[in-house]
Image 1: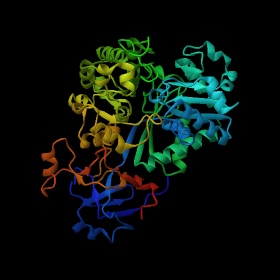
Image 2: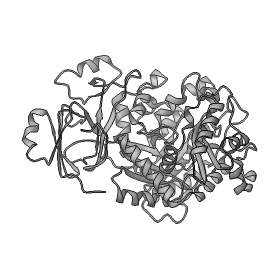
Image 3: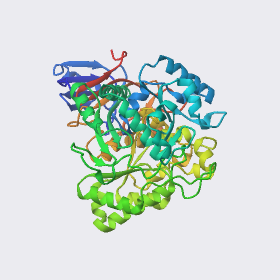
Image 4: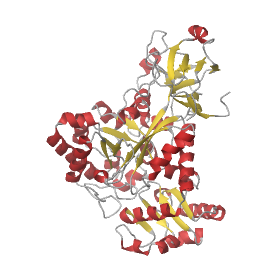
Length: 536
């Protein structure tokens, strides 16, 4: 990355800092916050600053952390057509056909279709995909990225796909067949293709005020070499920080670069939408209870290995049966190594959508981080949406219990699982604060902390995610249209926050009827990684 700006004074706005809740100005020296204070004290730092920025009422916050992202897939999706906007199967196929006519590459990738929102209520078939894309090699992923439909041209490159677990016979692939399809697509992409996708994803994240991402890579998702590509890109371009995870059982072989852990999308099960999440009882709309990929003994062995090596262990886990199995594995590891060793390792679970009270208590007791996606509830929660269709209203209503986990002392870290849902941190905070169940809503402040400090703590960096003297000058500047105040569920507390003696930092009103803040600038350790046209 390029040399940081030496001394920058930002003034005339609002700076979110628990250490200085009334701050309207901030001085950074190199890559470090040197001072925070009010406007009356900012004048004394003007001569020391090489650049003075008039915030003009804008908000400065710590940069957001996206604790669960898939960067190459995100980049390819950003370069493709978003099928999530299609309101019917016909509309989806028309969009795909238009894109195929314009697309010149060997591999056509598109992502985001969701048949539960269509009047047809069914997936596309390979013959329909063929009519839309012609003879192109097409991989068309469902919104949850746990199943896809492929073109005949792709199948012809790997006819043995039809013998793999997860081949559905109509072009639909799940589980092992889906992993094999991804491998075919990766083989057909060049190194330049992958580097371009990674760069686009990182630049996009920076434009959304995200200054750190956890790359949840795994053998069935993307090649290990992507981690080296990301490292090289960050050496050449001003980009967000990336924390690398590699989700391979027992660590695999040949991992010769620093990683935070053998964690992330090491899958216990699949996804609700694809009916591959492992459930205690079968799905409400199909004669299946999903698929369990690992058992408690394998979980125990993986957690023990990672703990002994000083690395984080972690698992993708969604269904209640999968959660039961993974928690049993953690308990067994704690019995073998001692609870203190497990707590100190700060292992993590991704998604955690259907935890029982006993699961939550175990996670709190063992210090397991819940890396969750509030946008899932916004997209698929509620009485009539996907979760209710797949599970029935009773089971669906209990999903994603953020407030219950928070009250039980489970550390929360927010992420997008991009490209499954967009990189949109303020949208995620809004989703947590306006959960479809009132009793599972977090305060905006608690949700904000989960998307900043919580993300850093999830990778075992407790000092990150705050603006205070001596902290890294890693922040984002926001245009805001709503009033700033203390954002809690209690209107009396919010009203009290207008008192000049109140020592609580303020945040925007994120009510669904209001516009979300927009990112003007993102900075990582003093280096600008994004500047919008409105930055002046």
